[in-house]
Amino acid sequence: MYEWLEKEIAEIKVRKFHVIQNEQLDITKTIPSKIYTLLPPSYVTFISKFGGAKLYQKNAYYQVGVLNPPQDKILNSGEKVLCIGYFDDLEAYFKYSLLIPGKESPVYEWSDEGFEKIADSFSEWLTRRCEDARDNYTDLKWEEIWNGAKPFTSEEKAVVTARKQFQWQVIGFDENRNLKIAVKNNSNITLPYLTLGMRATDPREEGRIWESGIHVNVSNIQPGQERIIEHHIHQNLFTPINTEFFQPPDPLPEERDKYWEFQKLKTVEVGKK
Image (cartoon, rainbow, N blue to C red):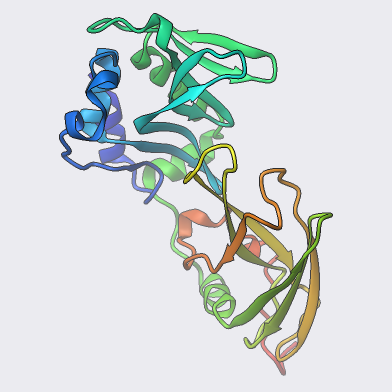
C-alpha cells in the first residue's frame, strides 16, 4: 500500500516538495492505546511507514497533510471527531461514532457548509486528494517539479545575495492589521519585494503553528536608503497578539514563485545604467 507515493517521493527532483517525518517510531507509544485500537488499518499503515506528512508544496503551503498523531476534537454540536489531516484549507476527520477496531472508516471534511463525506477510507481519501493536488499544477510546472528546477541565473544569484543584506524590523502592528516595518537596503541593487516569514499559534488549537509569508514592497528603497513601509495583513488567522515575524531561509531554485524578489528583476548596480 502507498507504493505510488514512495515512488513519487523517490523520483521527484524538487527538494521539500514532499516532507515526511520518516521516523521509525513505535506508534503504539506515541498514540494513546484507546485511540490506537480504533484507528482504521489504512491510516495506521500510512503513519507506520511515513509518520506525519506534508505533500505537494504550492507556493508557501502544502496542499495535502497527514497528522501523526491524530488530534481529538469536539465539534460545536458535541460530536467527537479525530482530525487526521487536511486538503488545502479543509480539515479531514474520522467520526468517533463510526470507528470500529480493525475496520476502515469514512473520511469527512469540514467546510462552511458543514461535514461532507469524501471517501470510504483513509487510503481512498489520500489517493483522491493527492490526485486533486496534482491537477493544480500546469504541465510545465509539473515537468519542472519532476525533473528539478533550473539553476539560478547570475542575475537571480545576485537577488539571493541582496535579500540577505536587507535589514528589517517590525515596529508596529495595529488592530486594523496594518504593519509598519523599518527596512534598510544595504545591498547594491534595488529589489521589487522582500519576502518575510510570518507564523502564528492557532488560537483554536493550542500548540499548532501556522506559517505564511508576506511580500513587502521595497521597490522604492534604493541602495543605502532606509524607509518605513506599511503593509496590510489579509489573513484572518494572524493577529497583533499571536503573530511572530522571522527571516526565512535562502530561496532554492524551485522556490522562485514563493519569493517575490524574483519578480520583475531589476538588478542594476549602483553607478550603472
